[in-house]
Length: 236
Image (cartoon, one colour):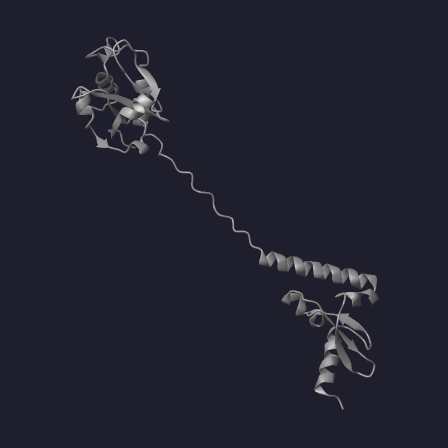
């Protein structure tokens, strides 16, 4: 009489492709592999005798049963096992690649702003003259601002105090080319100085008697310390 246990053991052995008296190892493998090879999924051996009885015993070497198989079968088994383990490893390890932070910056200057900057740089070397309004006679600081914008169709007030309130105020960390920079270089209404921002932390101005129109960097401690405002009169 065949008991359920004996029938299950025979089915178990048949699925593993084993004949009577042989043993095949079971070991801890990914579920996908154990689904097709259930007899090797838990690190033990199933032995089936010619009489139909079976027994399970621990296996000292998980794949010892393969030694009795033909070399081609062992190679095929190794390839299948390697593929399954590789697939299992790939499924468990996922690499999260974060997108690069967006590289943002100030928008490009408008044609008018670029023209203002070019006009200002075109006056480099023109001497300072108090009350001067044109390159032939020279510029004072506010006269240089007034003339440069006037050449580009933009009417600004003549004095530094008025230029310091022209247009709209903008923070010093979002400057754009053609913005007006205001500095406190003295006291009272006549203690202001103006220049034209040209980009990359630089500006053009007519600084003082005996000097000429020049381009300087805002990294100079004197200008950084005395900067008080920026005004925008040219919009993108």
